[in-house]
Amino acid sequence: MLTVIEHSFETLVIKQSKFIAHLMPFSRYDEILKELRAKHPKARHFVTAFRHLNEHDQIVEGSSDDGEPKGTSGRPTLAVLQGQTLINVAIITVRYFGGTKLGTGGLVRAYSDATNLVIESAGVTTYTKQEAAEFICEYSDVGKVEYLMTQSGVTIIEKYFEPLHVRMAISATASELESFYMAAGRLIISA
Image 1 (cartoon, rainbow, N blue to C red):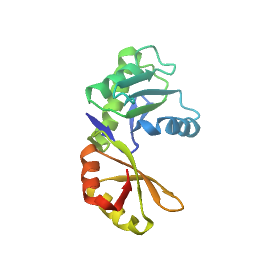
Image 2 (image 1 turned 180 degrees about the horizontal axis):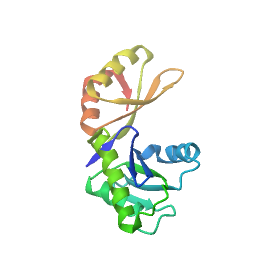
Image 3 (image 1 turned 45 degrees about the vertical axis):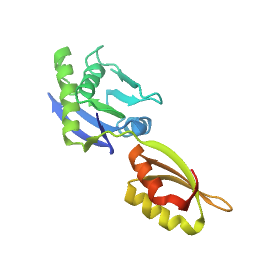
Image 4 (image 1 turned 90 degrees about the vertical axis):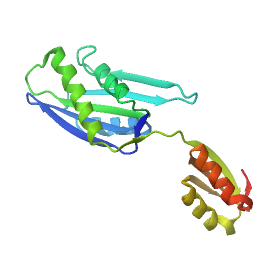
């Protein structure tokens, strides 16, 4: 499976209609949809599709035609995401109507082509499942622990500065976590 890390967009123009496809990590979907609606008040449609893994590692998917004829926009967009095996992603295609009707086949092609265009230009990467973890260490060991996290590929989600210790929430693949814990050894008070 593949995924994206950053928000990217591409524009496709067909018969004066503009299709601006935005591809993003699913975690940013609601935020970016709100921004796009504010930024493009004259746009006719905001067609969406998404695929993500839930807490049970099941694929959840959905799409919306947002006023386009049923099955001509959201479903074809989702089909491209499925075909490219993208996960934990969302796509929002902003459409400005150019005055010429494209017909149902034309709409399906336009939304599919816009989706393929943004996927080709986006920084697509292999999906690896990240696991969340938390541990406690001494204040005096924070520098060493952060260095070991960088070496192991572990990402710091948040640091909590408590009266006697520092608690860190982290994220990494299972093998990266194992590598980090082995390297950190006695620097970690409790995990």
